[in-house]
Structure formats: C-alpha cells, structure tokens
Image (cartoon, rainbow, N blue to C red; front, top):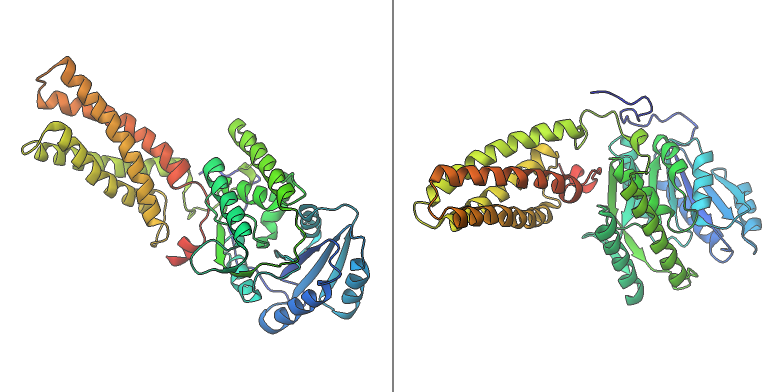
Length: 410
C-alpha cells in the first residue's frame, strides 16, 4: 500500500512522562464570573482524585469583560495544575483552537464551564485516546446509556440538529454539540488548520472533517443536566450552524475538503482502503451471485419468475449486508446492526426495481424467453445493481469513519 508522505502514523499508547501533563482540559469561558471558580475547583478536585496521570487545566478566557480574568488569574496562582489563557476575541471555537494549538499534552480535552456533563465520564472519554484505540472522543446525550435532564425546547432543537446533520452530511456520530470532547494532539495538529469556524459550529466542523478522513471517533454516553442560567442565544447559534452546514456541504460536493493528510497509515483500519474494500466486496458479491442464481432457479420450479427473483434477492440481500458488514467494512459486534440491515433492505428495493424492470422488459420483448436468457439478463442487471450497492454501502450504510462503541464492543 502506498503511504502518503504527510499521513498520520499508526496509533500508539501515550507514554506517561513523569511530571509532564498527559491531559490538558480546556475550559472556554466568556463572562463566567458567577461559576468559574466553583467549576474549576470541582474539576481540579475530580482530576486529582481519579486521573492517574499528570494533568493540566487551561482556562481559555475569550475576551471576558466582567471579573472572569481576575478570578482566572487567582485560580492559576493557587492551583499548580491550572493555567490561564487570555484571548482578545470572543468565540468558543477560537478559544479551543488557541488553547489546543499551544498545548504540548498528548491528549487534549474540553468541558463547558457549567459542568453540565457529569465528570465521572471524563476518564472513559480520554482512556481510548491514551490507549491508542481512538483519535477523537465525544460525549453524547442521544444514545442509550445517557441520562439527560433538560427542557423540551432544547431537547427538540438538539435532536433536530443532529438529524439534520445525518440527513444532509451523512455523519455517523450522534451528538455534535455536547460540550465534552477530547482529541489526540497529533490529530489536533492536522485538524485545527482545516477548521474555519471560531464559534459554536467549531465542534461540528472538526468532527465532520475527522470522520471524512476515516479517523476513529469514540462516543461515550454521558449524564447531562441542563444549566438553566445558560446565556447561549439559541436562535443565533442555530442560524450560524445552518450556515456552517451549508458551507461544509458545498466543500464536500466540490471535493475541496483536504483530508488526505489525516488518514492513518493503519493496515488494520476499519476499511483497509478502497482497493481492499473492492476486493472483499467482490468476493462477497461472487458468493452472493452464486447463491442468488441457485435460489432463483430452485424457486422458479414452484412460483413465477418475478416472485422467484424477489424472494432470491431478499434472502441474498440480508446475507450480503451481514457479510459485507463483517468482512468488507470490518464492523464487529451488534452495535448498529439493525440499522445497517434496514438500510441494506432499502438498497435491496432499488436492486429489486432494477432487476424486475429488466425482467419485465425482457418478457415484453420476448414473451417466452429461455431460462438461460432470463438468467443472463438478470446477471447484467444485477451487475449494475451491485455497483450501486457498493457505492451506497460505502457512502451511506457504512460511511468512512472510525467507530467507538461498535469497535469497543468487539
């Protein structure tokens, strides 16, 4: 396999050097004098008690105009693991970009200052990055295992936003905006120069680029309690996010998102490269074709050609999706299997329409064709359906991304 010069190397476990922070947790703040000290002390105490490696807390103050800078300076003086970064411009994304770019810790994370996410999820969040299992880790409020307390309005907005992301950009991660994320520094060094947004869309853009590059994204269900005093302008943020989605969509459509340098030189990757996928897909397809033809010929003895075609295709479609999930796209465990089969059945309907349509045209042109002619036409139509199936499998059913829970379940 040809390796790009600027490709990311194989993931390896993080080496803990005595005295050097393994984890840098950034707390982006803007006019948070009311909760800053309480939250930072709580975060510091939690890390002191539970995190087994040296750590740092970075308060990223993005242009606060209240007493936040004075409180941040005092906390830095009192807590040896804390530091304060003062920025001239407002914007959470810009604050994270600056703090992560300047850090030398091998694992970088951030938490919202209100600590809405329960801190017991912090170690599970960063552990896959330290071990070398994953590239990025995100907290999610939208999967089984998470527990969320928030108003109906925010719940609906959050779910609608993530449904919109999946339907327009085809993403696989479940919760783009949870303020609880981590990334390996070697990945951040490649990702950050590509992220253009400096506000709330920063998280989504970073994840979309990472997923399109095939990096492994690990999701952690979290317990999350909404902050009733949150001052986030929901309408302005939503409009900005919609503009961000449109921009990323245009870049993806033009193929102008430069993700090649982010790919891992990883022979054990989930997809193994396009050539490897095509080879394995071809083997699965050949076996499926033999099974389909055999089943079709057997069923024709007891039913009509159209019914035989439908039944043979359905049986082979279920088996084909399961085989490609396991062998072509290297997905193990039960996570997402039902959804993959559901999408596979939708693709089956497309294939059925194509092959049935060709069969109908054949019978219209030649009312009594021979069995060999029928099978030949179906094989030609099946070849076209197979090509379409592969493209849909790669782009929609098993999109190029690194799974966390599914991989971990293996």
